[in-house]
Amino acid sequence: MQRRDFLKLSAATALTAALPLQRAHAAELIELPMYYPVAVGGPIAKIMDGYAAAFHRANPDVRIRPIYTGSYQDTTIKALTALRGGGSSAPKMAVALAVDIFTYLDQGVLVAVEELAKGDKAWLNSFYPAFLTNSRANGKIWSAPFQRSTPVLYWNKAAFKAVGLDPERAPADWAEMQDYARRLTRRHNAKSVTEWGIQIPSSGFPYWLFQGLAIENGQARLASVDGTHTYFDTPETIGALEYMVDLGRKSKVMPSGIINWGTTPQDFFQNRCAMMWTTTGNLTNVRKHAPFPFGVGMLPKHKRYGAPTGGGNLYVFNNTTDAERAAALRFIRWVTSPEMAADWSMQTGYIATSPAAWDTDALKQYVAGFPQAVVARNQLQYAEPELSTHQNQRVTKVFNDALEAALTGQKAPAVALHEAQSRANAILRRYRA
Image (cartoon, rainbow, N blue to C red):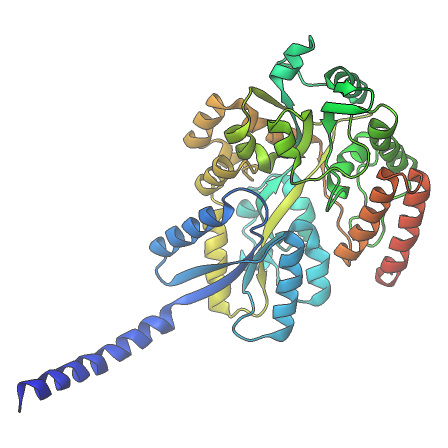
């Protein structure tokens, strides 16, 4: 036998011998495609890729494969489309809006996290109750809280000091917020404003920040627990919208019309607004980019304190095998563990979802040096569940359209909200017993 032939045979033998091992390895590896809404701000994809790699190193038989799917709304639409089509491209898991629970249940694509956990109440009850409210339906917990938030108020301490306000104290209530905003609004002339007193963004999904005003005005929920009724035109909801409209159109301390969600932090950084409402998920972004000392406060109260919860949960779909479901639960328990929840909160600004996470040494040390991080957690005691109904995206669009019509002066708040309630009734009637 020539040496060249020997090498060929040896290589072929080695390859043949290796194939069963490779097949065995491939058979053992469980890969879980996970849709993820990357368009949530900050270097989230890089962090999530790092988490997936770290989990795989600790669990060589499971690989989480994040697939970045745009906005929260895009993620749900793409997930349902892929699940209907079936095949290997369909996700096994997703991080999606907690409030899309009825949308997924109506399509019959979920496995309840409570069933996967086989009744491990200690683990399920380890999350803050406020974050589980939007996870419950039909007597079960369907998803695990992950990147959760509430809106908070950010203020520019230097701007406060310049107009004689206490830079260490946020406005306590609606009247004070309006008065502070009046003093903070700087005008070049009668028609030109160089810095607004306050901005409450209203583009894209205005219902979320507006819900904070509605709660504070006494309308705790905008939808029933079973997602079949909405409360869009109650006196409390109408009063909240009238206050929001008046900040821009009458008091002229906030831009009238639609305020862009995405550019509001830039307006804050560049002294174009002195106070802003936005998600605590922007906390790390503000900490990195605000060129002045800033404060973080709970949303000012009116009849009561209040804020909606928000953000995404971890879902598992029913196109999974038993082994895939076990692997998915292993990842969910790992990524929501106290240590990982603390890390996620420190890296992003989202609220660590369990009291145990706040007891970790890492998060204690972080909060000691950056006390603004604890405001959103403290606000949870006043938080109410975010608007969630069957056909959630259709119903929230109806509500968003009504809010935008009022904010742009096309319709009076009461007229816009009565019309929205009527349209929501038409959508939800089929789901009522």
